[in-house]
Image (cartoon, rainbow, N blue to C red; front, side, top):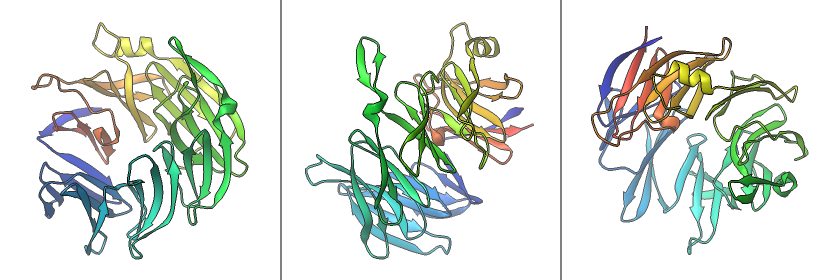
Length: 339
């Protein structure tokens, strides 16, 4: 259970490798140590490396703060950092001069050049130490993370189409969820879950009726189990056994547990210590115990500012040590302490 601790105005917190970075509207600090003052575009923190992007006359200057507290600056033009790999490498999103083509690549800071760069049709990707997974045209492509060499591909046209209201659409990638051993886990735009062999590029299973477009997460580190908690569905799959363990319609659970006459759909969820933390509707946070299939705790917000809702995204819902952090669109961070 959690009890409300405090509300911090205009604040976001990021956690990684024991570091806590606090971002206010014009200041970034490592707990009480001020790292940067001024306007910034975005912040990335991973593997103990902090990247701050500053807008300078329409172009971005990237400030990189490593574990040794040395600061490097590079001009990235109109490119964006998607993910930090280490103090010398990051994934970046870039464009052609006319903005007609989009690229994802690995950029090496020390050499000032791309290790590799690929034209993509979608910004969705998954980077791992050995392989990177991208969407290029109608294909999921598997490439070497070191060199960008193509290792395999899968033609999404083989999955066919689905009915979206009155429109028939091709089944496309919704989200790359993770890799277990040699199996890539992907949610699709029709709500299906695709399991793809990373060695051959061939599908090993397609759960077409999973009803899980988003919010499918690994149950625990290195586990073959994945939990999905999205909209009105809970699903548990075993990637190694290639089977659905459980699938529940959670409408009644949501209605019975959340004090509302109107059904509040699950918009976002994460898994931490075997529990599923979620945001439902625009104003409710809670957690679901998949073992007993019940919502154990929930909290409904009453916002001061009209139009404020909870941010259903990764920085909007975080669990760290004994605290739960929930961000709203007014920029306020609500902190709950485990009781």
